[in-house]
Image 1 (cartoon, one colour):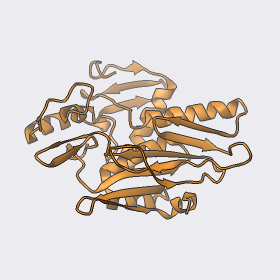
Image 2 (cartoon, one colour):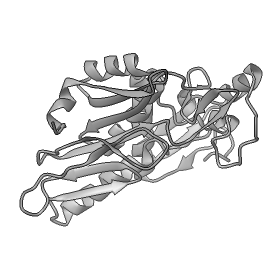
Image 3 (tube, helix red, strand yellow):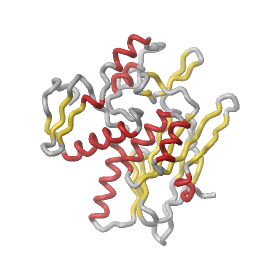
Image 4 (tube, one colour):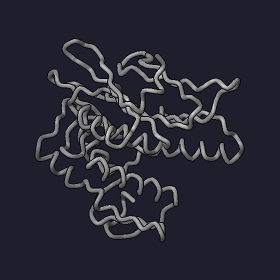
Length: 263
């Protein structure tokens, strides 16, 4: 699809339609913070598949040119015919939602085969249902946002509920130049890496696909806007901020997240 000519329709799978339709929905609901057409900006800042050019920082003109390639409104989806097309030369990158979607599909398959109690994980996106043997709750952990050995920042208890958890952070993939830190999380609304204090986000939802997409969106939005959105939509969310001056982490969470935290 990314290599195809503008206006030419492509027949895709039902799963692709579901992922793209959900991506459009989350894009709208987060005012563009979650955008699967952000690929040109990701590559421009050196976080794409090509090796990053050392010491390269794009200027405003280069950012504007890449931003001109973005546009979820240019993705046309016809669910009835399973067709997608584009009205301008956009490209799609569903890495911010596809892992969560795959977790959901595997969980559904396990239920179909009679495995009501299970825990599924792909690339850090989780879904759990029921209990472990002995009716013991699943106990996932939230990772401390540090670029070193993995540490548990907070422990959770699934309470036997069917829940999905996804996280997003800017602490593993970044570069520094002249004392400035550039995150791999690019804000598609201004074309630049996020620069706020929010270091990691965890979202609990019924589906891992939604949790995956919202975690990405919230990290882009920053703490204040993310909390406002999560609270307005009753989304269980956990936020870890980094005070650089004190070199300390601080957490806050919505009331919906509280019951899953282990004291």
